[in-house]
Every structure is written in C-alpha cells, then in structure tokens.
Length: 166
Image 1 (cartoon, one colour):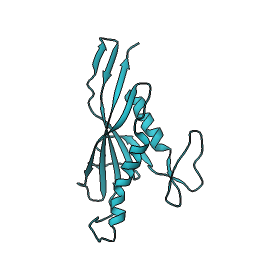
Image 2: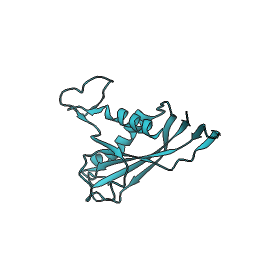
Image 3: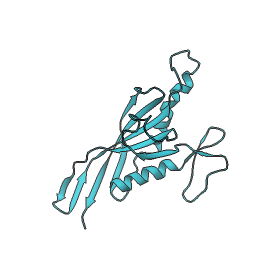
Image 4: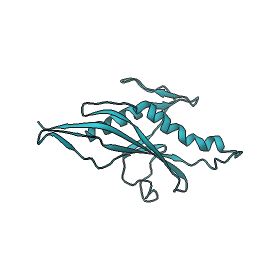
C-alpha cells in the first residue's frame, strides 16, 4: 500500500509544470513538457526530518514535497489473510520564505503565495485511488514557521487502505 500510494503521489505531482507566464500546466500521461516549462515541484522524496537538518542535508530544490507515513494500525478482516486500515500520510510542503506578510508590506502578496501550493496539491490528490487504497483526502493543515529561510506546510491526508496476503 505505501509503495503504491507513494508512487501515485509522485506521479500526480510530477506532472505539474510551471510555464514561463507563471501558469501551471498538468502534463497528460505519455506527453512531454512544453519547451521552457519547469517542474512545479522539483523535489519529491520520503520524509526523513529533512527540514530539521537542512544545513546537514544534501541540497534539494524548492518547492519540495516530503511524504511521511504515520504509524498504521491494521485491522484483520480475515486473520492472516485480509486487513484494512485508515492510515494518515503527512505531506511536508517546503517553500522558500519570501518575507513579511504583514498588511502593507511590499512582500505581502509574495509571502502569502506559500498557501497556494498546498491548495493546488489538494486539488490534484483529492480522492485519489489505487488498488490498495481508496479515498485519499485532506484532514488537517499545519504551518510551521520555525525555520529561518523556509516555510513548511504540513498537509495531513488519510485514506482507506487494504492489504491481502496471497
């Protein structure tokens, strides 16, 4: 389930490109990106407390999305054969801090853009389904400002997950 869900998140978010005019373009499967387009989210990876050790980590481009799987409590539908769970998945969306967002600040609009990416991600991932998970959707949003040059938005998603032993 985790592998399939992680790959589905990477696939959906990896299809988003920013065009030279600033608009967002979603690449259809099998298509190539338009000339001059750049990936909207250049770095997607598994979460490993990446922002806590940002100076010690290898550099990763921003915005970045890190996928964290919270502990999963499986419930047996048929012992030893079939299981169901409702896991939570945290998406750590890391963007650059653009400056003060206070009213009247020259940077107010740019600073508030940190909230645009989580909204777009929600639009692209809402109710996503796969063979081993269904109804992937948003439950909670948190904003972590405890870092000097970055803003970390933590979007908490949940789904219904299935595991069947063969």
